[in-house]
Image 1 (cartoon, rainbow, N blue to C red):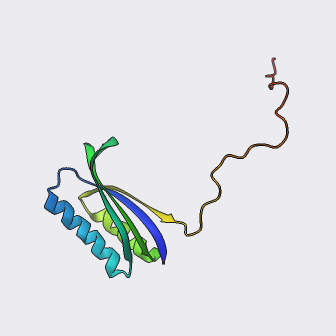
Image 2: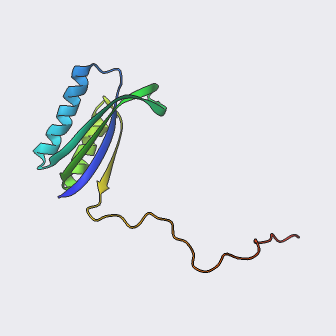
Image 3: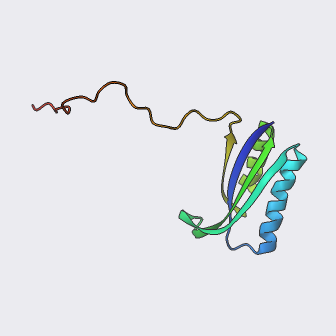
Length: 120
């Protein structure tokens, strides 16, 4: 099983009951397909970076789960057909730590003179 992180944005005009039922449906899809929910974070309504379907705000929800690639495909298929979901994005979380994110410093002394542009 692989670890995934999915964030999705629900329509902010949904009532609380509708938003919760959509979240429960998504959790059900994960568990029915032999997935394991690790963490669910409800970030609430936030301003969108740009308008989506003429909405300026969205209800953000983040889910960490473990499952197969087939589970991820099924989950994303369901996101596409749900009217309540404005956008979604899923990413696979690597089990091994990522390579060093530090910037590498070139070896040796810096060049003495800055590069000059050629003049024609």
